[in-house]
Length: 168
Image (cartoon, rainbow, N blue to C red):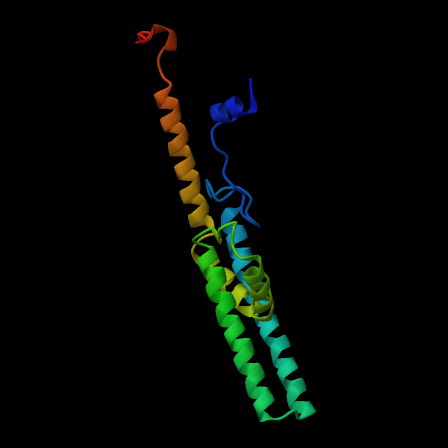
């Protein structure tokens, strides 16, 4: 039996989510505890990150670099945090195309790195409702199950019993 036929017999498999594996399908295997842990952990990491950024800002104040530089740092970190939050939040609901511009992706990595607090806050807020990315994965899994069911129902019956077509 070929690998494709074995996969069709077993059906589609759910895609694992980071920190949750496939427990998101049935909400079993410690799913609620994992979600609570992710919420607490991401919030604690966001607070710790904000404290690190505050210490960095205080270092600039001690160095007396000037109010213009202080303002530029605050604006840059705030914008990066907002962009990282928005990008992470949107990624929970859609897949990024594989053919995306690699240069744009590389520049966004820098913004996300600077705005890491936004990423952590997005994880915190999403984990209050569901596992981050669960809605997208659930939709894709249901579509795969429906496709497989349509394929299985189209093949029911005895193919030998069907009439042979007359060739013209």
